[in-house]
Length: 360
Image 1 (cartoon, rainbow, N blue to C red):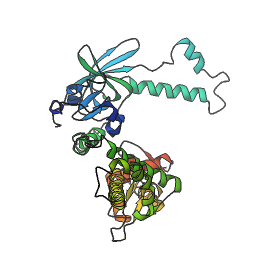
Image 2 (cartoon, one colour):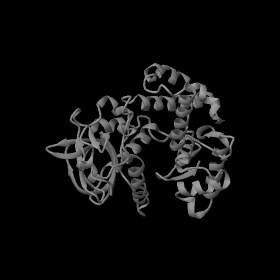
Image 3 (cartoon, rainbow, N blue to C red):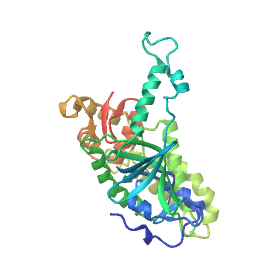
């Protein structure tokens, strides 16, 4: 279980630095007990701290243990086995009053094949069914944390019923959460002690610079010296400020260190990888590696023909194992998930659950 957030450092980071923390802009997948215990910021009401991480948006998955309905919203009590939190879920506009019913009718009849009004009506009905839950149903909620009448609750921006008959979604999340805590939430956020966040900002800009370059030039592979020149402006722009702090650090050394850190971040994110580890340091760009994409699609195309994977598709870990054997042993799960997301955005594959994929 996660460490009590009450053990966090007493002093908050200045709010001007919060945006440097990736957790701040994401829906954080925290245990409900930690959401209930987080301390509210003294600087900005509505923002809370888990250890050193500023948080105001969360993503929870749990069982509905109580339900209250009002005219405009539902109040669901969600239990993830660590605690129970109230989730305020606004009702979607219904299509069952007279005015909406008139709009949903087909003015020209439905005998001419596809009718967009009928399809929209069916979609609306399916959407409403997924947002009306009963006690015992599994609910996923994304929303903002707030405190009302001294009680912590979530104001939902999206919510839906999760169909999980064999508990695959719950097991997947149960395995994922400790990893998130260990690699992210329990790691201290330190934007920079002596430079007030300058070093962290420089690294963030460096990572963004390379990502934009890969996308714009459609770079499939590169060596470090191929992209080193892109980081020169970042060092030059701050060289005057660092002159007194790093009198013995040469320009070349600063460039080399920044590039090394940047490549490490991109590898951790799965944006780049080394297909073969040799002295010739060559990196492949995940979203531009056509051979990798072909290997993934071939695995899905072949394995989803088997009865075991025909209905649900292949789990991400099965895909990872197969692609490693077929393409490269150096592939990470983070890299594979970047590639899967890219292929899904291009309509080459489709996800059937959060962790299962099949080819179109």
